[in-house]
Structures are given as C-alpha cells and as structure tokens.
Length: 219
Length: 240
Image (cartoon, rainbow over the protein chains, first blue to last red):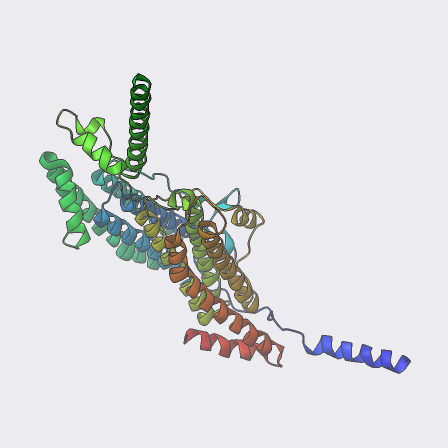
C-alpha cells in the first residue's frame, strides 16, 4: 500500500516537473545609447497614431453614409472607404517609424487611448451629410487638421522644447507625410470646386454625374 | 310575394355589403404590400408637389429592421479586434521581442478584421440598413472595461488570438440563430446565408490554424531549448 502511494507520488512529481512550459524568456541586456528620441517627441508621435485612426473612422462613417440606399452614392462611398484604409496605413507607418527608432517597447496597450476604458476612436464625430459636397468639405477640413497635427510634431521634434533636433524624423515627416497631406488636400479642393460648379445649375444631376465619375476613377 | 322580395332584397344588400367590405380589405392588404408604388403614385399626381409626399421606397425587407442592431454591433466588434490585433503586432515588432513572424500573423489578422468590417458595413447598407458606430455588445463592453494587456509572450498571444476569433465566430452564430430560428416574427435566410458564406468558413479556418499553432508551440516550449524553438517557429510563421 505504502509503495503504491510512493510510486504514485513519484509519478506525479515527474509529471509536474517534466512538462513545464517555458513560456517566458530571460530579461535581455541590450545597450540603450542608440535610442535617442526625446520624450516629448515620442509622446507626440504616439498620439499621432490615434489621430490617424480617428481620421480613418471618420472616413469610414462617410463611406457608410454614402452606401445607404436613401443616399445611394457608390462613387463617394468607394472614395471614402479607400481614404479610411489609407489613414489606417498612415497610422501603421508612424508605428513602424517609432519601432525603427527603438520605441514602443512598453505601454503598447495604451497606444490607442481609451476613455472610460472603451476605445474612443470608434465613434466618429459626424455621421451624416446633406450632400456629397458637404462631406468633401468636411474631409478637407479633416485633412487640414491632421496636417496641423503633423506640423506640431515637427515643431516639437525640431527644437521646442527638447533642444534635440531630430533631423531624420523631421525629414521623414516633411517629405513623406506632409507631402502626401498637401497632395491629398489639393486633390480634395479640386474635387469640391468641380462638384460645386456642377451642382450650381444642375443640382442632383451634377452630383449623380460626379458620383459615377468617382466610381469609375475618372477624377 | 312581398315577403319573398323583401328577403331577396335584404339578401342582395347583405351580399353587396359583404363584397364591398371584402374587396376593401383585400385592397388594404395589397396596398400595404405596394406602399412604395402607392407613394410614387401619390407623389406624382400632377396637382401634388413631389416634396410634400416623401417616397418610402427603401431596400428593407425581411429581418433587417429587427436585426440591424446586432449587425452594427458585430461591425464595431470587428473594428475593436482590428485595433487590438494591430497593438499585438506592434508589440512583436519592437526590437526587444523582434518576432517578425508573429508580427506578420497579427498584422494579417488585423487587416482581415478591418476588411471584414468594411464589407459588413457595405452589406448592412445593401439590405437597406445603416451603420451606427456607437453600439457595442455587452460582452465586449465588459471585456474592455476589465482591461486588456496586449504585451504578451508568444504562446499567450496566440491563445488570446484564438479566444478573440472564437468570440467573433460565436457572434456570427448568434446572428444566424436570431434571424432564423429564435423568433417567429420574421425569417431571413439571406442574412443567415451571408453569415454562412462570408464569415463562418473564414473563422473556422483561422481557429483551426491558431489551435494548431498552440499545439506546436506548447510542444516546442516543453523541450530543452525553448528559445531556439521559438526562433524557428517565428521563422516558419513569417513564411505563412
């Protein structure tokens, strides 16, 4: 009887020790001198991820509005859904840049901030528009807002208040991000101008034609 | 003679009244079925201003009106998971974790849930509904309120991903049940068919893939050199 108990205990002991899963690894010792981004700059870049995702969700709301049967503008819907995915790609580009500079090793869960612990970026501010022109105008205002935010990051990362001029980041933001912003804004402004003139005399017909041109990528 | 004619006249009168009642009832029922047509007829009468009589011709039929709320919640569920997968992918892409295979795994999951959400918004509007970005189901809300950590170790992160995918899959089942089995007010096989075609096979395959990964990883991590095993597993994931 005692030998049976002893044998069972021995088997249990081996079972417990031999199947231990090594899920975690030891702490690493990597030099940190190469990480030279200043804290205010990192903080600004982190918040820009959320700004880009908020813009993506606002475009998503525009796409959803123009997909409705009572609105029925598939060209506008296609344009805005594409813009939503592009804004998400911008957010991913910013994340990639931060990762390249050695950041985002902690507080990744806080990257997309939560209000009362819920994801606030989910709820877009505006969800319906009277016509296509007003949506395009709101899109242009949104792009101008995001451009200002990027310029704020550049201002902070250049000198104020860090005293460390982050040349590469400023260069990257200026060339890649600002370039794309300005091109996008010019594109939207041109579209608004065309559409408003079309609608001046022909109202719904103008918007209908414009929508079909957008759908066929003719604009 | 006079009594007969009186009864005959009464009988004819009663039949006539019954006929009038019956036809008006029928036309009332048919009119309800043809409300779009009737609205257009009324609006297009030359004496009427089009704007005075709005035309109620929407694409809504079947169960979309009642089920719309659950589809909207499902869309928002997808968006939340898309962002969560993006955070998990970010964590594995930093220089301390440096697991590019895991980064790719979660980035693909994030992209898939994002695209599914857009596709579902387009589906809701195709059925005549609209999107509401404010609705979140209670389960997800309480999960979010309990706090979430996305900076996990490898096996834990795959386990979390599998739980997330199962939640998405189960919600698709619930929507399917709502429109077909659970209620007697309507029956909408189109919505359930859409769930069956567009979501259920994808979920099934992803869950099976992730379950396979947990099996492999837990076996690898039991061995003597778990770090080397993780390196090779990560390389393998990059090729998937």
